[in-house]
Image (cartoon, rainbow, N blue to C red):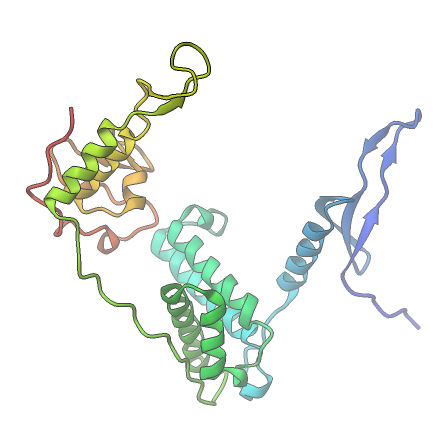
Length: 293
């Protein structure tokens, strides 16, 4: 009678030595699974990383059931996995990237991170466990009100997709946190000018350790905030978000956005963003402060 499989598990592979006794290969953790050895890349003292590698390996082997079941027996982790597969296929087609290139797309990275965060908290729970109290507890532990609402919107979409595919019949409702208050104040032209000039004129202060000014702080010739002045100025003129400005380039390039001279717009659209996702320029201030010289 064949022996029962022990399942995937960690095992410490002993260090290897040459004929002189010198260590040639350090002891590393491997995953043993039904006679196969899978390397983790973790040395003996990296137990936490090895355990995470085992967790990821086991998760990668799991195939969620795709048939109608009672919500009492459907793990939310399966619901999220099915939704992740479906949405990633759409996103790869939208951004025209292969599976091995999807990590280069910011929108895909953010989506996978949100699903991973949901899976960490909800994955082991059953679909029937979803109620208002659990949603409020998740939002409380998440800490960020706006972020928790966005995550729960993804969970709602995953559950709706699962139902639309005919994998469950029961009704599951998601309770979302209230929307945040809309912004009611913006920088005026005077506020923006004051901020820009403060950054442009700021000089680094250093404490003197010798000479007649020993012990005193003296202004140096260094201007450590001038890059912020340019950053703010581009934001005021273009209305672009911080990420778009940080990724901008003064010259045309393949990946980054570049700022066209004399234009209020950052062009072209960077990879990973649709044209309708570009930062709005309608709100840019046409009477923005003059650029410091």
